[in-house]
Length: 335
Image (cartoon, rainbow, N blue to C red; front, side, top):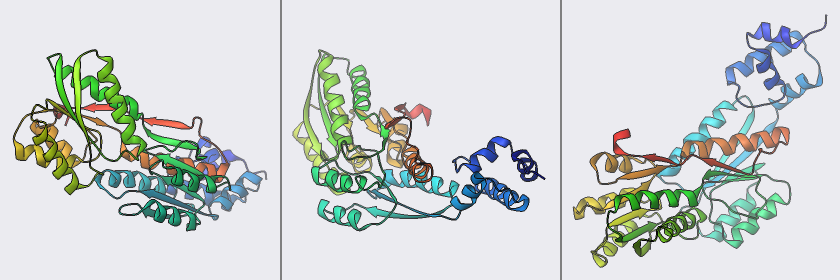
């Protein structure tokens, strides 16, 4: 008797659409559902090539490496990565991670070069040596997805993250609405200009200020390298140096130490920050911060793993090489 996909669907208790996704190695199938379908395929001795391919895919080994900083923001990114890996648990995927904290570019390049994973998801500065390191791998057919901050001309198949320039412009728009006078002084707190993410936010913010035609000037751009101690000391020094500061834009992940500075000074500023780390939530709820622009770190971890897996299994590129996560403005009243 000829075995049909309908019979597999009836035996496993799922739709024919789900059968098709399993047979072609597509994502978005729960692990327990995929296992039931594979068991039904084996029991019914379903033999077309697609069925054999589905069974083979469940046994083939894949390896993915993530390269990223280790900080509270990227902890939420890791939750997205782990969720994607859990959904793909029926496949033999090994996962490794290279944390970049305290490492020089030379050491990061060595670790990437020596790592033999089939695919990489990376959040790195876009320096020439990093770009060349990645390109050496992509030229050999190893797929890379950049996330959070992009690296152009490295051969990556996709970028997943915030439209950073737009995020900066949104922050400036919020700031301009809060500053009632035509004049004002702004302090920008950034992380490190080697990261495209931080540069583009600052560019979007300053370009929008200039386009407003108002006499709103930036007193200083303080780089903190997203380090707590450095953020505390440099922001404290900058605010003492510029006592006429009206507003502050935090274009980095330095919110915890920055919040401590403002609480210690006890002076009210107009403040726009990013993300929803615990200190940001606290600052929004007690009025220390006015707005935060949320960029969905969970999605920035989840999507690259799914994209890389689909490329490894089906050689399928995403529909676009840039996938933007939302720019969502959050206020304390929304929490």
